[in-house]
Length: 347
Image 1 (tube, rainbow, N blue to C red):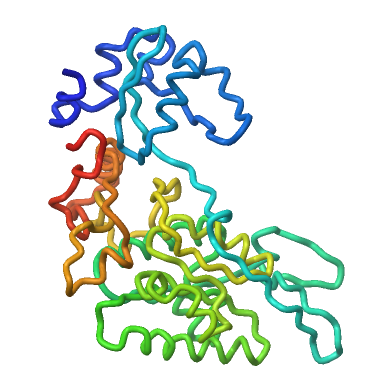
Image 2: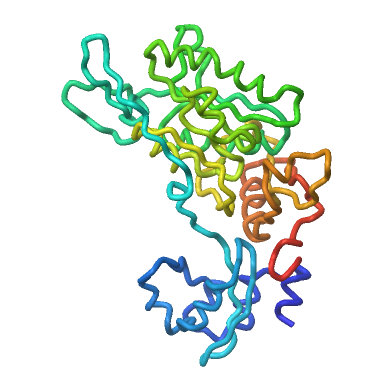
């Protein structure tokens, strides 16, 4: 009956836990138990009195994603467990390639980390001067999902202390230190347009300037490592499912690596705030990807399989937007009327 109530969205998980849970430790917290580590020899003993090891192993052995609710049992009774988020080590599943060392005109090796590495690590090395005021530029092509992804990436860049290019910077002739091209595969000659756009930044890099080039979005997912072969100046190839993990992947880039992140992965909730383009209207993702596989459409290939966001996360984001004075919220998804059908149980 509890699963039926949740499935029909008559009640959310927090409220249900407060009503029916027999666990004194978690009931008033809406059933929250915190993160559970899945690695070998993980230390989860503090959870034994809440959900015993056998029950935990059964849940962790089930293929789940954020939003799923599964039921298991132990000597303590029945346990309803909701997966609210999944932490994936994107640096382990992405592909990295160490750049070759370069020397300046005097034959002195140039620090592979460059100004980005220096800024992120706040490093101070004798004889190496790092520029602390870094600026970025994001160019967005295509649909509203790409616009929402760009807003999330901007939030992460600003969280790292990198600021957007201003009109004053342009008037002074200042050049960007980091550029993100968020691409679209639907447009005619999409790949050619991407390589054409990269050209001026690649030229700066070949001439010895320190600029970080990131290609994100659907063309990045479609082309993958081919982008690095055709445009070796590119630092990071970022599929749409990694848009909210840009900050993590930039650490590898800052260490002098080229990174390709296009492997299929669960999409984590983003702890940083998007830098929204409007103060009255906002985009809110509710489902990613598509399972339809229409013969004319590339979305399932570039955006992956359907993954609905937990209802609680959506409500929390919309509630916060309303408190900030937003008047219009658009719920986004490639196949939005499929919301919930990928969840356990289906909504």
